[in-house]
Length: 456
Ligand SMILES: NC(=O)c1ccc[n+]([C@@H]2O[C@H](COP(=O)([O-])OP(=O)(O)OC[C@H]3O[C@@H](n4cnc5c(N)ncnc54)[C@H](O)[C@@H]3O)[C@@H](O)[C@H]2O)c1
Image (cartoon, rainbow, N blue to C red; front, side, top):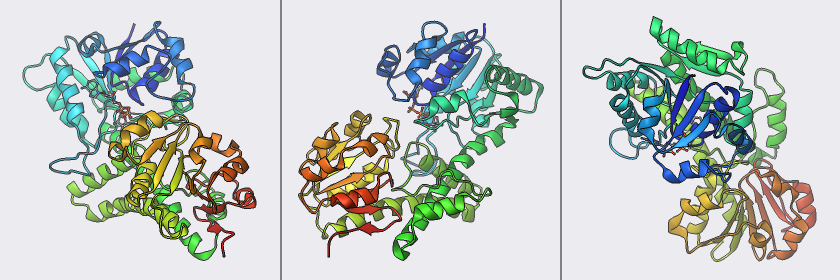
């Protein structure tokens, strides 16, 4: 029986390993983490992350061939294949601060693997890493007189939070990078065979390690670039009277462009896009490629512009003062169907509104626990309220910041009736029916569509 250990029981490690365990009952999968609370939660039905369909997958395999443990060393020692899925955040200190990846967790894992292993292993980079990280890892793993052989593969994860289970069950592709040596190709084939249990072989792409590492950064950079591109156009739409939804539809029907990732909004968030683009910027700069670095940096700059522009629109339309005005924030997760708030545009929007002395009431169906942790410095100014009707009652404005489908189904007449007039609604996700809201009496502001106002 093949034994897999995954270091890191987060948004990637948990779902990916649960899917492998579900699809491959003959493979024993142990997910290990130093975070005791996380591991304890994975053993219950109150999982540490929210992801539609995840609990069912975990329940099917847990206790059969899927295990969770804090015994990292034992997990590594027992395994034939070790996936490393630890966090690789942006560095906040020293050389490359604010841009480069902080690889300390990764390197710690490599040292641990070397320290405790008593047999040869395949090491799989699941975390998103800068190009040529595998080389550094190999140096750490093989330093000194180590008789054990470690073969490092790159297998970046392309799942999107909110649709992780569907993405894992039926991925567009799985990418595996291996060295072009006999042992590299053998290890690569071992991993291909695991995925081939449920994924058609033509969708399992194999490359060398460096191409695989770079493909993940490139994929995220391209996705984020589309969001920034349509957001740049949304500003022009507001200035000219064009409608960004119509423009996006018109260009998206061109098969060379395609319709996905063309939704104008307050901007992208999540733990990956910004971090991975900045990592790409840092890589370009370290190879002396300043123009490519500048190009990719502008994608992040446009995202920041869009967040700031949204707050400015709120301020200007509410007569240039929001001090002491109650504002209901509907949605704090960085996207719908997740409780993840990392790098959520809502953080920046709330901070800026609080800076104008607004009184904020944050509501979200799944992300309130994380939201509370994001802005401890604003504890006096922010209320957290799971019920959107209670959040909106007595408010001057509502800002929709996450595209939860629940928010489409609210009774907006009831909400309008409970608000201070004029009642403002700022739709940061272009989620709602703006004509209907205007008909109720709201002052409606959307992204890239201008405003619908009853005010003279
Ligand atoms: N979140 C996503 O949507 C996504 C998608 C694709 C790729 N990725 C990449 O996958 C990686 C993991 O992302 P995530 O969102 O799952 O992160 P996460 O922060 O949710 O999880 C990482 C886990 O690793 C654990 N960990 C850190 N150091 C450890 C150590 N030395 N030993 C044992 N456990 C340790 C942490 O306790 C944490 O639980 C990152 O590189 C990220 O860029 C994330």
